[in-house]
Image (cartoon, helix red, strand yellow):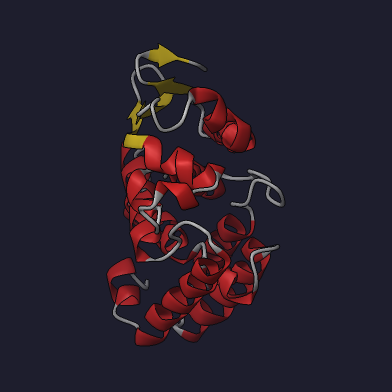
Length: 219
């Protein structure tokens, strides 16, 4: 089966990722290029390993994480649907087995909090890995006077960590936020729907989702 490392060597896919991110940069969005997708893909792999996925399923969720935002090349709205269609074509051209392709396509199609639904373990892993990636390095501008609320919240996050605790069946998102830059309420204002999706995703994986910001357990 096609592996993530093989996929990374594909020049056309690299161009697609770069151009999709360039489009979002021109619209003023935070980083959705390699900075983001490599983090998401690594978190997908980590979660899959912690949950004792098979090597093939770990590769599937890792690839879903790597390709999940390619649909932004066609516009931000419904980018998850566009990305799933593009991923289907790309992966079938590389002769990936149809069953594996379907799992990746479904995960990509359902990772957006406004258009998606957590229907299986693959989409659940991708949702948690994607929605947990909040951090300072995703902000493009370092001029705080130019920040919107999304920039401000991301810039305030000094540390972001996902923990899967199999013994107690818990998944934790631990954040360290500089409250001088952004307060906790700002985070909830823009990310509440994402956190609710993480809760749903964790439940699909047989776990309970928790959110800790600084020293406070908020969920």
